[in-house]
Image: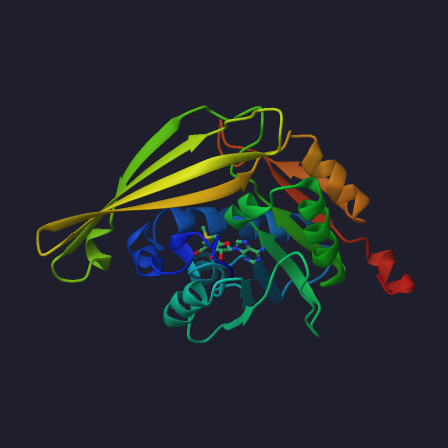
Length: 255
Ligand SMILES: C[S@@+](CC[C@H](N)C(=O)[O-])C[C@H]1O[C@@H](n2cnc3c(N)ncnc32)[C@H](O)[C@@H]1O
């Protein structure tokens, strides 16, 4: 990663294990991911690739069902993922342009897709996923939001998981989303970290540039990449997930 790498994935990656319990919301989400995969896959699913696997909280839940490989651009996040999941495989790579020997039965692309800041990035990602899926396999694509759901100046506060905190350390996370130009495809995600170490406060600031697209962009680009597309509502009010199925017939042409 370069000098614009968000601090959460570089010098502040140590706070990731404190932010969100892998046995909480991640477990509920991954149970739903498994249900979507089992509903739509047109082959037996034994292997799963998680693109933008981050600190491996999805992998932690999905490894009970599948043989999981994770790919991420950040060495620091991959180190977190390996610590949580020593039995899984993790590789360094850019999800828009990776090339692995293996073909997978399923691919998961969820929160990390926010770092695709143009439709060209999304297309490259979906084509790379298509190349790495076995015929009849599925890709689950789950954006955090769309242009239609974006809330200007939305601000959230969350606290470090008590059981993950090192002795004497506490962190409060303040996230703020702001779109300075709603006519383009990006917005600014700001994170403030209020870090207390043995009572002493330091405030760290972290800027993320994130992509935001209209809802119809997602299925359109998935179809263009060669997938049959279905959608899914997880919970009332949640943003749709898109399920791309690689047609089994694609094996005749080498996919
Ligand atoms: C919020 S974290 C993902 C956390 C993950 N869902 C988990 O289970 O722990 C987002 C991740 O996307 C990764 N990322 C951003 N752009 C990427 C790219 N082009 N290719 C691969 N990974 C990328 C970052 O390095 C970061 O680790």
